[in-house]
Length: 373
Image 1 (cartoon, rainbow, N blue to C red):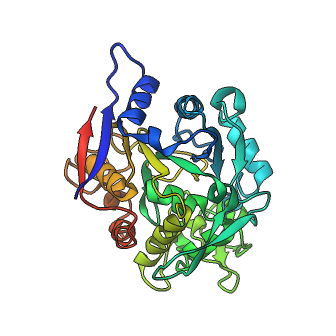
Image 2 (image 1 turned 180 degrees about the vertical axis):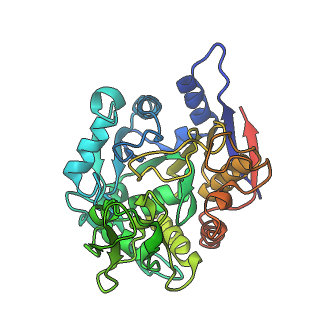
């Protein structure tokens, strides 16, 4: 049976977009996920400082208000990052969230970093997966009674795209869990493309990158990966501004996506009928919100979608994106309606394994029915 995916576009005449979001929430039947006094985790990506493509805080505030009307007790949450950016520990993470507009005065709910101060506050959740028998999930999210997953849909250099499955799987895995999910990647550097900017050097969580003398660029230096130290997190690939670092796979490109799907399974474990997903097809940037900048959107804004099924939701989102022509001035300008936009951005990445494996794990179905409201 096809899963129901509810959709509302961004046209407004006599109502506002937050009002349309609230209508979408109720039409999707999300009221039943929340009982009085439930501790409700609202999973949201706070955005790396410098990136402006993340979900706008007023949308989050509206969801917070709905949860409060249903007598739930909402809190905003995300887990710390593996890379050494501005969200790798709870102090920096909270500060970044507040600077990006997710303070209590705007969002209306407290912020709790899911895996604690240094990423070590996690629960080992048992699952039956292809790769894992247990996964490390941020304890605050695990102990919540219910969860509302708010996702900004965008591209991703290792996963093809980042949707609801990535938001809960990669997003709620602890720092050690993120390392497990990325362990199949061993990046390499193309010397002739390296500009010696040191961004990867400062970003690497494993101190696995060193700068060495090089006469091939103005900086007089290039990055070099110390393979014996490399964790394989792949974050240097994402942060390199010149495309000098490319992922090489220790096993198969599918492995990281499938591991992420298994972490998503662990993240929602114990919350049967208590997890709801809303995805925003706005500012559809080619890169993840973890990058400290955002490039031009690859297609026009589309709308907001909601479902209890994250697999169907992600499939519906990628189909809607691919059914549009690329925007002029974007990194994939000239791509036509019907062409795969994320394969155009990342030609070596097939995004389908995350969806196929998630379906095999019982997270949802690739078959969906769009219900427009």
